[in-house]
Length: 257
Ligand code: CAA
Image (cartoon, rainbow, N blue to C red; front, side):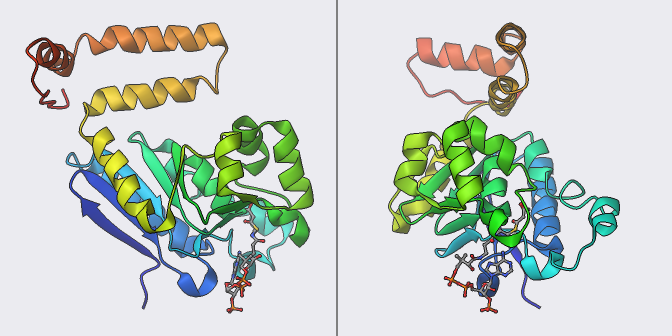
């Protein structure tokens, strides 16, 4: 049987590939559970400092699998805790997760990319929340994360008209961190992930937590959270090493402690 989620390691970077090319990487339970298991494994692996999630050149993921869910009734969706039960493992990852998106990232695919800490897009990427065409609505965070990323006007436009946003517009609007020629997407994303994985892991995790706090708190609460994390960093050997290396004009050798 084809494995619908493949994993590889590239140095200190864990790579997760969604692998259902015959269905544009549509997300069913096997795929979502497979991504969750891969995240669990990379989170538990002390040699991994950053995680990349990608699809193929045609699709990151074209959404939740429509055939899989088309006959759900209200009670099944509710009782099985559809989405909440297994989709949000990326959101709870403590190590940084980068989505490398080429081709379609639609519906749940766009939502899964937005659950990651940042999106690197190939110049072929197309983002959209076209659920309205199916008689439903985004159910994995699209109506909440998209406005936070691109603002209300564009989020309303995408969710209400089902239009797609190309990579250039996605970068201009703040949805993606970088646009990269398609044939270099994975290489460039792995390079950036390796840079992150080369830093002190506890500091990387504190940076991620602090930036995410900006979306969950008032400015003063967020500033306090950041200040406490900043103070805590002075308890790390890696802070001593990082500053000593700068003063001694050498490369820091972080030990994640
Ligand atoms: N679910 C199941 N199968 C899908 C799929 C999906 N979301 N998206 C694509 N596929 C399948 C197609 O059915 C097709 O299969 P067959 O060859 O067996 O017919 C195969 O992938 C290739 O797709 P197309 O022939 O349609 O390829 P295309 O290049 O003409 O179009 C596309 C590509 C624009 C992505 C189009 O397939 C499409 O519109 N897909 C659906 C996108 C969508 O509506 N996503 C939202 C899903 S709902 C959701 O995600 C809810 C949520 O918030 C969690």
